[in-house]
Structure formats: C-alpha cells, structure tokens
Image: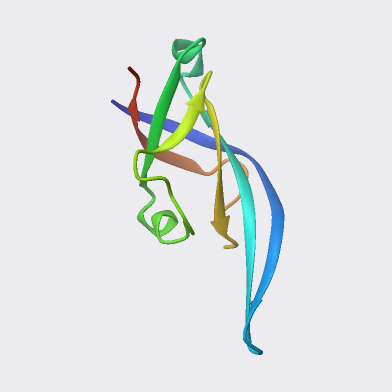
Amino acid sequence: MQEEAIVTTVEPILSTNIGESLQLEFLNVTLHLLRSAEYQGKVCKAIIKEPAWLLMLQPSAPLDGYLMEHGESSASFVKDGRIATGLKVSMELNCP
C-alpha cells in the first residue's frame, strides 16, 4: 500500500573521514505517516519510493524495509541539504 509520510526530525549523528580528503556526514531522520491514525497498534515494513534522490542517500537500507511502528519510523541518510523537516516522502507499506 502506498502512503505519504513527512519528515518530522532531522538530527546529525556521525561524521566519518574516508582517507585524507573525503568526509561523510550522516543524519538520523524520523518519518511520520500523514494518515498515522490508521496505523496505531500496527507494525509495518516501509520502503521509501520517492523522492528518487533520497534513495541514493541511504547508506544501508534494509532489504525488506524500515520498521514502522504506530505510523512512525527512523532512518539514517548521508547528509544532504534537501533533507529537512516537512519533506514529503512516498513509502510502500507492508502490514501483515
């Protein structure tokens, strides 16, 4: 089932140096389903579908999706200025 989520928090979590010239920074992001009331008491798996550029910033996305509990989930991404509170994200949900 396709659902829309919104980014509610963005927090820096880690800075890593790879070699002498490459520094990577990561963000922890909380995603909240817009229709979260329908998912209270449910545990689902969520796969991010859009925006497409966000897919490229997932350092290690779980193959079966992020754990979504009570309409909320968190994920880590490589730092990008486009990731901000209020960003809308399309997700594919699998709720057993």
